[in-house]
Length: 538
View 1: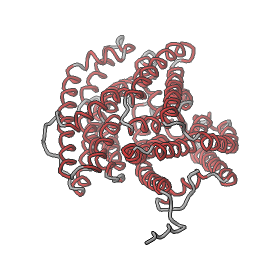
View 2: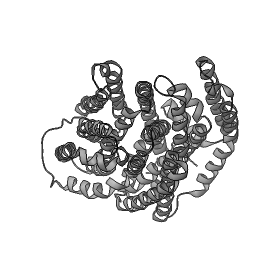
View 3: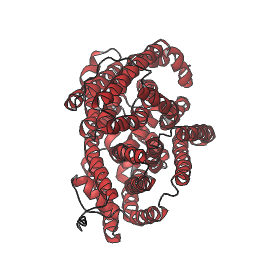
View 4: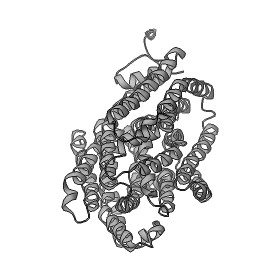
């Protein structure tokens, strides 16, 4: 008996996988957008309250320490080590064995980060002394930074557990709850900054407490989603569990591989402590970079990891290559115009949103120069997540780690070279250039590993994107050159001009892509609609 032929409307497996990734990225991006908006409101509130003065410098240096460890023990490395192993267990073993792995990972991680937190609190004076050499001449500033570090260290525990919960839910293709979790973190920080900080002798301490409470909220709000999937974390200390041991093997090199951005930013923060306002300018500059990066770049990398892990587990390098190519094309489609827009409109954006209260015009210029430096590497920050994710799906964390070590060396060398002529902007530029180096080297290695990365469609996509930048850049430069950005007041007029530049530039960019027939535009529509659509991949 002959088998019926497929219907003409049937989609090939890779196209269905692309649909799945697009819809997942749309869901994550939508939830992340809300989180980023609240995060932006949080940053504006902190800028208004503390400006770029000593308290703000102390806070952002102190926050850099647990934030670095968060990337090491939590979000990046946990996802890269946990999701491939958990996906394999979920696909090939019983639910009992899968949940046993999750609980063993939970208790092992909790034990490890608790020990790190205790050591960190006790060693905080020495850590701050090493990481903020520019503060040593000011005993009060050094003491405040140390106290803030000690208060915020427990944040590491809660955010690590939140990252593990996120890994479980993402592996089970549940993306909304993990993506919404940071919303609660930002709400807590805003509430503590605006309503509780006036009750403290040092108001900045309330913000540090809000960071810890926000981390706890980020973990707790994911527990109901885990329970719906049938998992409740229980104490099962079993570091010798085969799955946990394999996670550890993957985790050790990935600690450096995925944390390269945080390590480079920490190097920048150390050197920025020699410049008044330097740590604060770098923080706000990177926060503006992270807005498009988090909404789209991280969302796509998060959505793509389960698919890549499944393809790698099947040994299907052809599908994996096509998925990586799709991810790179979509990342560049959004990040290149975002980079151009931030570069052109850096002064208007910072002036409108930050230049209020204690945040002065001088601080706007300082932050804008940091933003310009970081923006050079925006496309690389996002592309790195896709390329590194491909290595992790292949359970290869060693290669990204080796390249990361080289990248850190490049960043340090460039920072020391550029900081003298360019100040804190040189530090931001060095971080951007190091990210470009890191991404290009990994892409070259992955090209060899997968016997190609489908360069023709990728090159054509980059060409279309470059052509479509013309109206965005032209309008952005014209609006940024208006004299009203140097004048006080007239906020309504300034907001109108900024919106004109952003909306008009976006319409021009996407309009040209529509004329050019870009398939990436169709995939973007699918992400925004979050429903199935028949879109050609290549």
